Length: 318
Image (cartoon, rainbow, N blue to C red; front, top):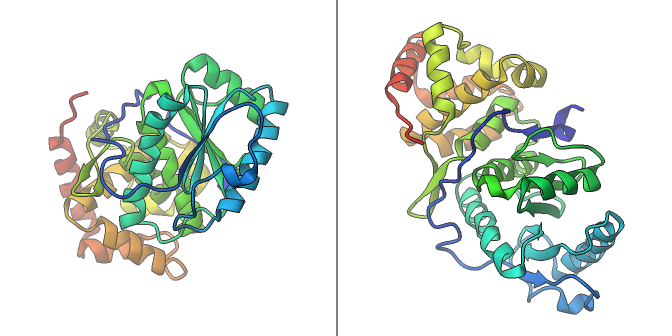
């Protein structure tokens, strides 16, 4: 499976921890209708009055009716459903618990849209929040026909959904929410940018209504690779094919991309870099030229040495 049909997964063995301070805090409430399991209500009762967004209440109503049928056919008709624009959140928790878990979705959506993404996903996607490893395994098998390739969570464009073992924390969820946004907002974005952004925000916090990435568990592996001299040049990283990025030393690739974007963030250049790269994608498909311009560096080899020294000084206390 290649391209956008790839199941986007985190590196195996990761200890994923959410670091979203006050998920759901701040900002106005988006479209959030809780839909209990059991007999289907009339479509007009499925959603609250229209909120800003690309999908109408009627579209959500039709989607939920079809989703109910799919869930029942898969033996999961008991799952609760709520609409959290622009997603539909599905879970095996009681409605009140699911509402609390869904706060992470709203928290991330508000902040990601504020700074990065001008386009929302072009179709309604379902976010499955399974409360235990066992229900996650069963749910993914029933809904996709295959076992999950990660114990934490993934986005599948093929199956129009994000599938999460939410017991592992909200970090994986925020990471995977980035992917459908990149898919819609930056078609053809290279893997290093797609996974770099997802990885950056898998451990994140709020800064006056803006999402910021924090240091995380990927730091130790990157520091080890820097000391071993096995980190590729930034030109090589940005030129990697999807196969090279995801298969060849993927742990280092994810971490290098993450901490390159983390550096841009810390320098106050990340949002502008993303927007400039998106605008220049036809002329600069790898983003390397835009990166050089954003950094203001004539000597990228020298910059990488300084960046590596900076990374070695970073700390993460889990």
